[in-house]
View 1 (tube, rainbow, N blue to C red):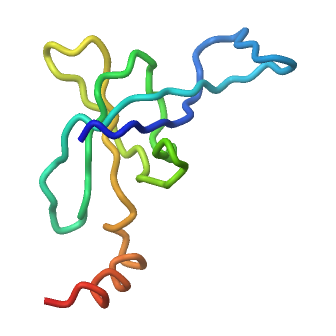
View 2 (view 1 turned 135 degrees about the vertical axis):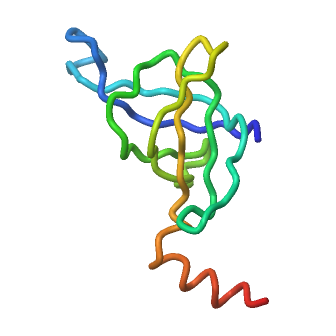
Length: 108
């Protein structure tokens, strides 16, 4: 918890100007707020702190400050007292392809 993470989202702005280009994406940065309980299909899932940007599409990759892939945005939640929405990020550890290697290395 507290680890910084960043992701790129589709932007609502029409005149988003960065140096020499116009872009319809924006970069958001947040921190890991809390983890969710694992389920049969999800091994590691966490929520970010509220972000003010509107997350319109799921599927954006989420990276740590050093560039490591943390997971994929799989949804959005809004809590009663939040000033924004929280991104729900699922790790790739729940994907069967990655779980086979994990199970080999972590036998009980």
